[in-house]
Amino acid sequence: MGTSATDHTDIQAILQGFGHQYKVARYVMIRLSDSPTVNQGFLQRLPGALGIAEVPTSVQTLNGNQPPVAVTTAFSYQGLEKLGVPSTTLTTFPEDFSAGMASRAAINCDTGRSAPNEWESFWGDGVDVLIGIIAGSNELATEAHERLWTLLGAFEAERGDVPDPIVEAGSDQGQRIYGPIRDGYERPIEHFGFRDGVSNTPIRGLIDDSSPKVRGAGRLDAKGDWHPIAAGEFLFGYNDEIGESPESPQPASIAQNGTFLVYRKLSQNVELFRRYLDDVAAQLGLDPAMVAEKMVGRRKNGDPLVETFNGLNDFDFAEDPHGRQCPLGSHVRRTNPRDSLGFQSLLVDRHRMARRGITYGEPAEVGNADPSNDDPFPDRGLLFLALNIDIARQFEFVQSEWVNFGNDFDQGSDCDPLTGSHGHGEGRMALHYDNQNPAITCSAIPRFVETRGGEYFFVPGCDGYRLIIEGKFGPSL
Image (cartoon, rainbow, N blue to C red; front, side, top):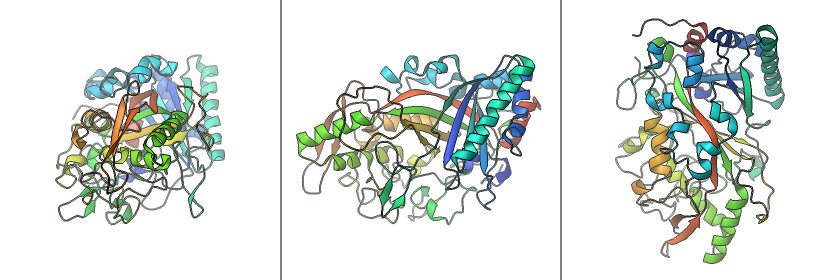
């Protein structure tokens, strides 16, 4: 077991990160047949069908050798069963993964209109395989996507028993650039109008320790220096932040360089968000844009709401312990508290995730909110993808304890103002709008973001993937 991830050829592209080369994503959900042989044959023919050397794809981010199209393939617990993975291996997977996201709804606060019985209907029968096609252009993604459909058609003609492409998710243009941020320089924007993809967790062994991307995003030591997070927090087969190698599914050859993917489709109600900002700003005599920025914890151009920072991600909260600049309950402080909880970032490091989200749907028109638009599930939002080694300790902890409960931030039971499960307009948030006046409370915050579906997937390393689709399982070691 090593302390850093060095076998880059065995790590799927989604974990290594896409950088600026890959701007378009298509995610296709597939329900497999009842025949392991048919399912294995389908996946074995996938590389040739897509016109690439192999699936899944490893992206050589450290030496610049990046293929024009990268493909990630991941399996739900049900999918592994349908591929003939033996019970001796299946029983070694953790309970959170085997149970699936829908059964963990209470933990994740997926209630009300975000409850599994309200999700898009196809989730009810389960999703077996997620195939992610990531490319540098819409044309390349479309070509690979059409090749996938051709393969499915060929299998249907040959066997009469075919894996079912139940749904596609994602935007034809992936993480779209909706407009200029400042000085004519364009960056991806999420639907509420904020610069997206600002903060990504640096993983030891996948990024140079001296990279500027490490500062503010990694682990903070007692000297105030930043370091990448240990690879074992994201990959099986490596040491984690406490110097141990996490228990992995068996045999170890199946798990090596693998991880778990949390996939959630989140609908963003932009009209509701704008109406709330207008209403609360009018009541309190504030600027709606300022209220939005306080909720997020960043300005729309991505700058953090702290006075001292050296870049979009190079900052901490040491000079703002009481949240007078960046509110204690803001989205930024809840999802990555950095040094907010004391002991440098020790209380935060083991709950970090590698985020790979992408927007979907057309942006809402710029302008005032339309009171007549009361669609509870508008077709725009975020495909939330996060990678972690321990779903319960990482994703579910952040979702339940930091996003939907505020005790760690002295916020009692208040939720994240942006993504929290506020129920029936019961949310609230305290914020300072300057350094002279006391805090004010934004009350009756509705639920702006609702879950439309999701699942937990296992993302094997490239070698582990081949063992799964070839049905080659050695002894549990």
